[in-house]
Image 1 (cartoon, rainbow, N blue to C red):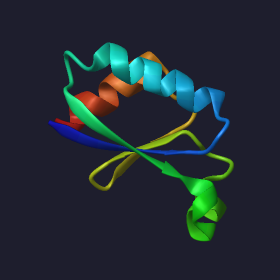
Image 2: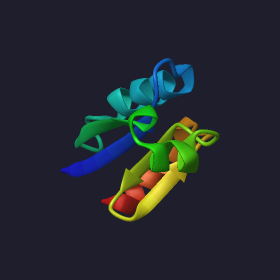
Image 3: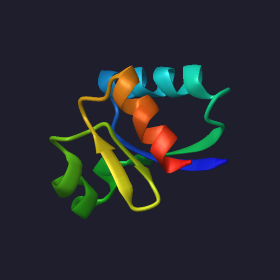
Image 4: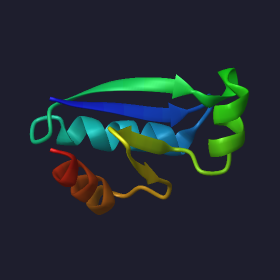
Length: 79
């Protein structure tokens, strides 16, 4: 099972879209999702404030914009 970290903030409509895409791919790519609010950490906020949503599996990251094809390829390579 993949362990995915989603760097996000509230509100983040693009992050909500990515979570919906992940839900549709759950059957093919089982995963656990951990959400990290970048506004609670100054370093993360400085690093990702203009790039969220950002997904991370291991040391590999996928930054916005994130569409279904990009996400599928990212998950396939992470397995």
